[in-house]
Length: 135
Image (cartoon, rainbow, N blue to C red; front, side):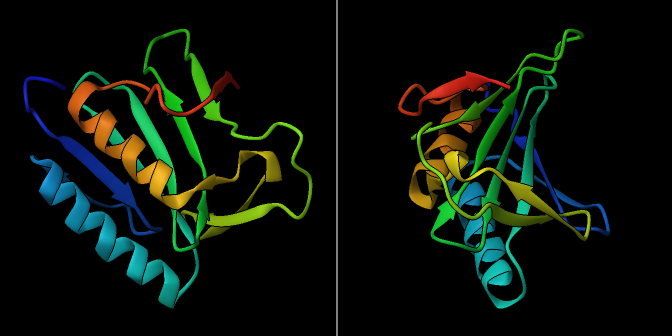
């Protein structure tokens, strides 16, 4: 992503998607989507690079989730797991209009997933500030 090509940001059951070409555009869109999700229901947002890798994050709550896929034929994917010992109620985020339960151990502070989105925009990979495990 260092070429500044941008990302496709996809969300919602109507296959809503836009291209963003700067971190400022990304932040503004994620702010808007977070506000929308807080007014309706938390949902997942998928950021897709030109190379096919993707980062999925939750918006609309103080705790989020982050999942990365490298877009390869082998389909290597990773989930941010800040506290593998955490238990409790699952986090629920909608995807394509359907609720998805995410394990409590995946709970990541929303600001950390926002930083992961910025990192993904700039570098196309997993933010090294988060703890990732193959999923």
